[in-house]
Length: 302
Ligand SMILES: Cc1cc2nc3c(=O)[nH]c(=O)nc-3n(C[C@H](O)[C@H](O)[C@H](O)COP(=O)(O)OP(=O)(O)OC[C@H]3O[C@@H](n4cnc5c(N)ncnc54)[C@H](O)[C@@H]3O)c2cc1C
Image 1 (cartoon, rainbow, N blue to C red):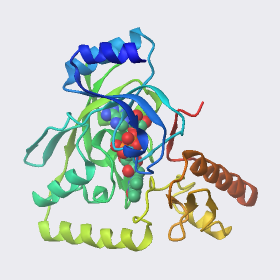
Image 2 (image 1 turned 90 degrees about the vertical axis):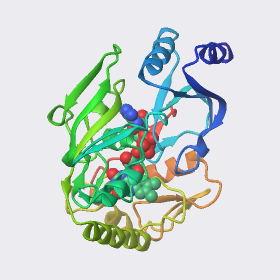
Image 3 (image 1 turned 90 degrees about the horizontal axis):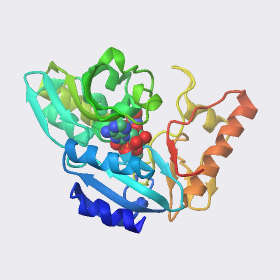
């Protein structure tokens, strides 16, 4: 990789960092070292970088805020692409055009400040706009699919196209991007409605209070581990009912506060977390014959 990194640096596509600990870029605070992080300056340079990586068969991964990703403990030999420079935002009346690297929480707070309603569900979701669209992140019976009007996308053959909401196949925690992993979300256009600032702020602070009371936010985690198997069947309840709350493996624990969260209680290895996830999945299958689907993404485990 060293020769490639030299060449990538010489391409001047944006900031390049070498030997980056992934634990500093994931909310679980685990993961091995990545050979290289690149922060492309703009779409033209992102394309230049991708062309180089694909021509030279170098693996790469677009990473948002790492709040839904579990990297393994081993070295990631390849390039992590960060879209932090894709951070522009433009608000016209009730419509927001926002680039993929923008923080979803910041966006939700900005909408509230502008008396725009519709993004309250996102005020406690610590991802980027790109990661939230990929995941169709949501809460309180709403999600990105409800508010995204269209998305600017970079295709695998380097075209920038616009995809409408109906083409993005938004369903519960899933979207077009999960089945088309070499498409990159560059920008979203989001449609909100005029609202009352005090009411929006009230909803946001009530939900914040509820999250603090019910979720282990004082520890590193990546939010819910499993999708709920049905709208009224909660993964957390199933796990709690078989008595797994508090179970520890190495530095990882099934949270006492919320059984669908695994927390890093101190120097957890990624493998500790993965083992707990697999153990839980098996225990739920044995007890209820339910196949829990993992919401989080495992990267670099093969
Ligand atoms: C405390 C806590 C609470 C949470 N609560 C919720 C919740 O209420 N609801 C919920 O849905 N989630 C929740 N999450 C999970 C997580 O925050 C969301 O899934 C979030 O949308 C992930 O965004 P990210 O930028 O961190 O994505 P990452 O983890 O960085 O990436 C996730 C996937 O998206 C891909 N990706 C990222 N950016 C792009 C892009 N621009 N184009 C294409 N692909 C891209 C990555 O390659 C990866 O495959 C929570 C997490 C934590 C830690």
